[in-house]
Length: 130
Length: 293
Image (cartoon, rainbow over all chains, first blue to last red; front, side):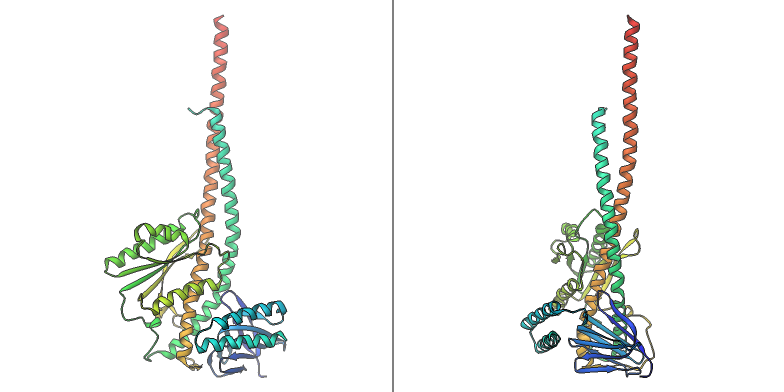
């Protein structure tokens, strides 16, 4: 736990989070990435999932994100998400609404990549629902 | 000469007009604040997006096989003009200015022997361009039902553009919108979307940084990223437009209210003068009548 880095989570509509964090777990498309200070620079596509950030004061914030990218630098992590919902703020109704949307996406998805992403979203939301 | 009753009616009607323009001005002011907030909130995303694009560009520089969305198709024969205007009028020169800029550019491109296609977002622009360019308008996007533009609207528009680009319908795409400088100043602007201008993506962001690793591969990341970037730019245009529209409407309604006030003053003075003239005339008639006896 050597120090902190700048963590930003932005959606097209607004800046969701901009804080110092000591550790961020990002749901990369090829598996979860844990970013600590001094991480090698990576740009990764995201699959739908939960970003978990341990902030400077040891609080953990979990945010559900859908679609987007993460740019990881030695002293900075930027997540560009299409949608972001704070997990604490999500109640059963919100989740089931999102789940419905995700299932509709899955039904409409054409092509393997799109299907895979939609299926991941559905699976992730089912886990949260429990 | 209008009768006194006519003048009273006239004053009453101008007063009613002033009430309406005053109300519209206040509504526009409230909406403007919201639109400005939305535009400010969206800025970080566009900024970060430009940074990520810049670092990818730095990595991709000198490599072949870059996406045609970035480097172009090699031709510039067919131009698509994406003209974004408001759904409503009564906002000063806002719609006219955007339409005029688009019309000038379209005329210039046609003179240069290029083919022009137009995609209209918003009813007013389509109405203004229909007269001269009705055959060139290939599609229209209606945002009348949308209260607050969201990213999904921008994505839908970007999706339309990309589908047409992939079908080879055009080579260059330019976005026309109104940049929000301040409440009283809106500048109609043309922004080239496709191919992306190399200089536009965060100029001189040349951090001598270790190049990024990509997960999955650069190509796989780049394709959706460019598409997202176009949607972001369209979104920015929509938000700037929304703020500009309300700003333009606010100042237009402000001057309309002031004009109505001036007019009421003038009419009232005229009315009082005439009323006094009538009284004087009647008095003279009575007095001269009495003297004649």
